[in-house]
Image (cartoon, rainbow, N blue to C red; front, side):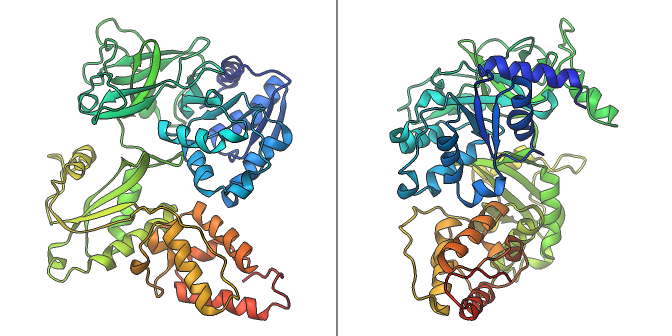
Length: 497
């Protein structure tokens, strides 16, 4: 429940922290139903009085270069997005698309809504440094909807602060700074400090006592930007918005469910206490994913799956482990089951499942009352201690140069589509089955829009993105494209299915 007072205070927080003035110019593509898109993209420009340029989210997803070209065209001083968007820019913007870029006008390019990766900022700076981008333009932030939007941020034009901690010590909630070259080093990016009257306290989530410095605990926050609770949910409001420290009764605080610490006065986020899964800046509840998993195939046992995320190659990946019914163990078709899971979750939630492990009956970790212990399952997955009877992972590959295929006959369209799946969805070519739908291979809504754009650019065929989620096979998709190309009067005429 966001009050006008919450909103005005958060807008003032942003104005001060990011040093915004009526002369600022912003370019945003985030949807306005996203709190960052609404507050940062629209309301802050009204509050401060600067020019705000808005572009449709689909324009960025289709061609990420459009965002950077808009920054160039309007000489934007402010822009931003979740971490995944910067990875997308690095991966999908070609050298030719970079030629006329000029990012030198930027003062702040914020990075928030999901974990901020040092490797992402380094790769983005390396690729776009020749076009006026400087490392100090990055502005890592931390926030949440329960605090209206932003909770902490650094100083404009300061280089992002990165520390390297001992990963083993971090798992024990202790901080030991190590050299970047240390084999056990784990990088964390500072998200600055709270502004105006916002206060952040690091608290032991078990004892409810404040933590000493360089010790990981839960972030408890207070101030005028904290909202009033959850609409018509008094119990959750009491649990989350009315926390008090045990010894001195300080409060009330909002319990964020995030873990972090202060080091040399700067805030670092190290993980999440709660089970919420955040991928590409969007929140997903594990129980929803588990329900879809268990309803996807009769071989999956009810109330016996766990969904969680792990960091692989500096990217948050979705992992699912699921028990197999005892009656299905003997003739288990692993490929059929994992394909059913991926297809179901892609269709219902537009999520790509990076890894699936099918495990032996009655081996998943549960509490004495029968609740799934997701943290224990995640730990067992990382330590390779699960009783796995079958598994499937999306393997990453370096992208090769794509060649245009001409003339576009049916064989070349099929080959192009297989190559696209290999490069964009990271699937081995020998694993691609043309009789199966593309959702089996991890297609999500963002990639579907990219596929639409790539079909249009390569073959002048305009598919609506929802078509890719209707379970038509790759063969059928290729045949539809071929039929439309043949029916076209000219090779440049766009047609819809």
